[in-house]
Amino acid sequence: MSEYDADATTGAEDPDVVVVEGEDGSTIYAVDENHDGLAEAGAYDADNDGQIDAVALDTDGDGTLETEVVDLNGDGKFDAVFVDTDGDGIKDVAGLDRDGDGLIDRVVADTDGDNKIDTDVRDDDFDGVADKISSDTDGDGDKDVTVTDEDGDGTFETVHYDDPTTNPLAQA
Image (cartoon, one colour):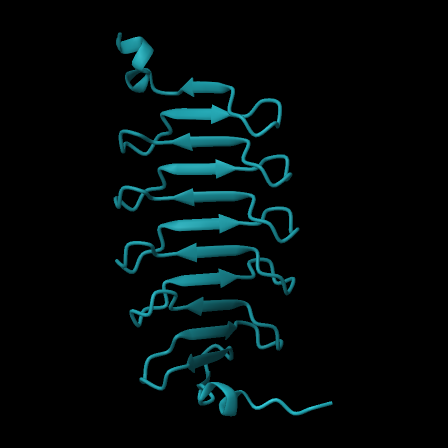
């Protein structure tokens, strides 16, 4: 078996890795890939069992760890992802693997920046295709319109207006 030296072929140095013990006994890992003093990734072992419970990433190179992948139920598999898409420090998109098969089954998002979930995309039968999308179109916190794929063919057949004031047919 041959030795492979990534430094020799790419000119890259090994990243700096800092390991810190949290006050609660957890272990935190910070990775500085480009040696600029800012972590591009972090990992967290909440219960110190040797399995990483969360990973945070700087996906756009701005020095902020805006994307977080989390093992919510402690089974050793990541089942949720949280993303700050607008750079305000608040996660505004979340994806969840509800049945543990490794595929995201539900996505919720704050698309207008008011810190309220206004879009909800669901795969309720866990086949990898969205079955229902609900949206709060007027920002009051209640869903206003829902589209549904009733027969599972990937086409949304049903539109339901939960709020009559957002129904264009009721306003005509």
